[in-house]
Image 1 (cartoon, rainbow, N blue to C red):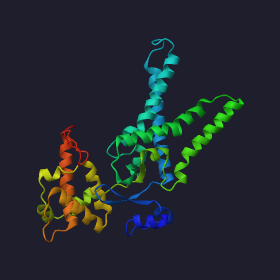
Image 2: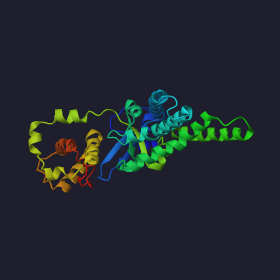
Image 3: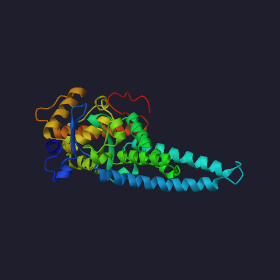
Image 4: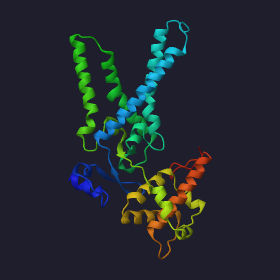
Length: 307
């Protein structure tokens, strides 16, 4: 059953092996668009994590050197204790905010994920929220950092501490290998936050839409500012996914919803594809212009009054 569902979610004409076929998922957004997503597998996620860990390690070493040489000896009294406190504080801030800050960005990906062409998305077609990103990364502290710190510091060699070390190793192993043993390759943070990590190849949509749309189509679809202000950045991303991977039926359904919402009367021979492409281009231009003036519109519910 899982394979059949994966085959249905996989875009038509996409050549793949059995493993890759099982990684495709199909979700319906609140706008009614059916989007096909390819989940990141455990190896891709591990690669991204190792890259991010390497970046964090280099940052930690540089930060430690700055702390060690930044303040003269004796300035704070016992510099060894103060330096260790500052170093531990810096390490906590680094691991607490590194993933969160990057994943709250427009690309929803850390440098490691971007190199591996991955990104974080919300399951069930919902909009990715700051609360979800915060939750998935707080869980990382419990899953990895706290037990790993325990193992690094060590607790001696008696029987009690030996048992604690074994329990910590089991705890660490369960969470580290969790993505390997579940169908959607989720770690604990993904389960709590309701997120997926998907493969996100560099899209060519903006170039394709600009280069293939004829001038006649551009002149046929001229939308008012009131119509373009109906939607925000979230809907723009959904529309981009629809244009990139949606079927003809999906495009027709989405075009019908947009026309109804903005009050657009379709011409007798009007086609859905050119209509969606023209609306995408003009909506994107409008939103980018607003961003230049610090007035972002996150979604159709956002009034856009705050920057």
